[in-house]
Image 1 (cartoon, rainbow, N blue to C red):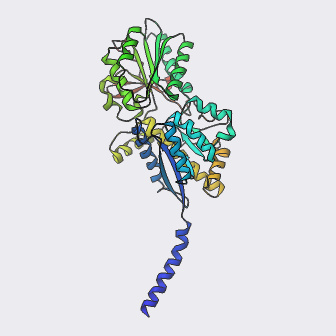
Image 2: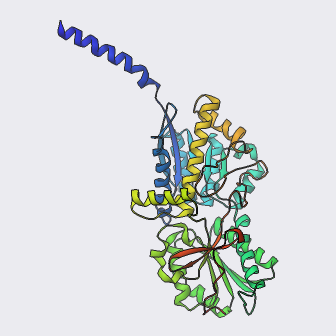
Image 3: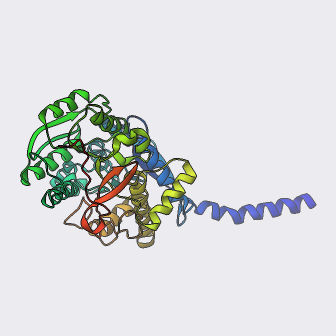
Length: 416
């Protein structure tokens, strides 16, 4: 008799628990990134920053459990697209998020369009992405916003800073001659061609454009060529830590007598460990840990993972992941269910026209799109803005624009 009563009680408990268990739903998020390959260090920061955002809500949005499917692009457009399609077809993701390289974004845009899969806030900044979207907004609306505007909208800061320094007499180059370099991909060429044209518009002679392969670490031939050209300025960008740190060191090894812009040197937190004092006087353009919230994030990241995050990688990823989380929360509140279709509707009705933005971020005042700027974010002092910085003894100082400037541009003794 006791056994019968016990069985009845257990059955009742299970019956009461069953509805609660049945109510939990799962939303599968395909998170794209370079988790192996030459930019794996960036992918590692992305993954950890994303986890920090969703740990804050215990990986839950309402009655949905958030499950991440990590999609490894390997920094390769074809491999990235293939992995992305597999995540849709085999892993049955409901929505996509993130990414780093422009060329991977371009290939994955096609996959997202094919399967009508909304994908949010990839960092690929290439102008080709804007061109593709503008050519057919209805087809490519699923690639929902870039987390990094085109190079042209940001690189003007370098030229404005240099012209201001020359006008004030802080720098007196013998000739306004410059050389442009960059990684041979969409991002490198976009940046190089943009800043090259901006320099020409400001009266500079650009004597050469040199493109190097992703992962290249021997720049002695290139740098010796630039040394012989006697250029006052060498400016460019790369997108993987081994290349950018090697380039930075070798500018000093060949005794290059030029002011050097190494855009992206500080993208990973241990940039100084990779370069040491060879980074002194190098110019870069990345956000800084300037707010109490960003500093708290940095400290929490170091405590949790035992290495320093980069503001342009982990910092910006934390913000875009927070924006993405806000999109999911808004979708559930406004449309009732977290379905692929409802998330797409939220993107069209709320995100793209700027009805939904993020002001709770740690790196920028506001992340906001408008129909006029999409797929780029609004760029400006109160929105998305990168300061020009100069490194010295492992410390960056903001030197432009004037409203955030901490120091004037410093010219090393060896620069003519």
